[in-house]
Length: 262
Ligand SMILES: [Zn+2]
Image 1 (cartoon, protein in one colour):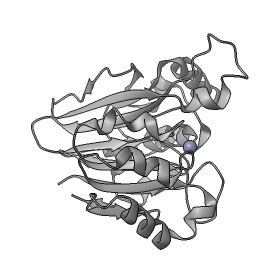
Image 2 (cartoon, helix red, strand yellow):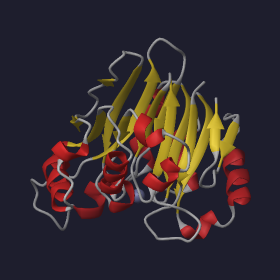
Image 3 (cartoon, rainbow, N blue to C red):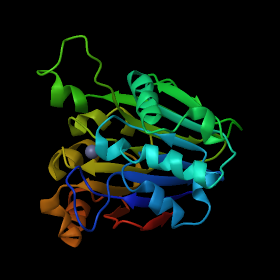
């Protein structure tokens, strides 16, 4: 049975009661960590043997609230004597700098004790996990373009991804928004049916999101990565989205640690 565990539902602002972005998706017995915001290693340790069992880490983009917990996760896996190979998929431009960062922290890949396979996302190029049961397709969006294009050289890459994750032989599809430039970044993803959309709500308004999801064939919507001003009133937020999206059966605004089963 698929499930999503919301390890961190906060935005980039440090908050006492919500961690940085990290969600654990269980599909066909595979554990996929979507983003590795701090303190994901503690959240995984708190849930049994996940640090050893995790199959893949899928990093949407390079903002620190989405990747800052990765070195500690690798160190934790080393200390817990993980042997299983670990896939880490992320924007290709980040692979060399991240490997250098890990090296700077005295974590050599040879010394980890388990193989790491670094995978560069390519827009709309599907990654099939090794037993062929799950596919993950990244859809690049303009979140980082919008943040930095005026500050950086015209040829600098500014990759950020949303995902479509599917059980290949089954009937389950989940969409994760990553961070967005606008709700329109999700339009192509929601043009085919999905069981659930997990969307951020820091860089888009409720109305903009509802306008894009209004005609979509979706069963559930989860709202995470909430800006501080709206996070304090989850019930009001949920009610408002249910009003705006009457065709969606369930709207969830999870707290850190909540699990959604399908
Ligand atoms: Zn973020």
